[in-house]
Image (cartoon, rainbow, N blue to C red; front, side, top):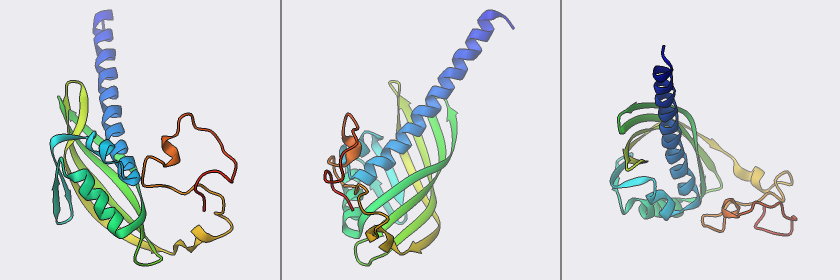
Length: 186
């Protein structure tokens, strides 16, 4: 293999790896934004004509971020969407992804937490060098219920509480350890 051919192969590989990372970052950023009720960040992960299929509901941009947040606020104290396995096929400026998601949902109506296991089936497009979601379909494959009373135990006392806002500690810059008297805590 010539030096030029080797360099071309390395550049193609780096471009492919960067695309894969940008795609995964977009999917994870959208999950994080949903857990923070950050409509602006959710919207930044979607193209204007994006469509999200969550069960029987089809949500279209630009209304999707606030509708999703409202649905969560009406039903849950807090949510946690965790992306695990991630498969990604890139075909030019289109990507087809399957991302496993484990969602923790702490209910408002009862002192219970449900854990849902499913997948996001996403189609993303790259426009002007940026990857965003165009279509998402969701599966639910199993659920489990848990007793969240541990949250109120001595073992958790002093841990930071999550917030559905930009007041959540994850937005702080720089990140600084603080005494137990500071911040919203269990």
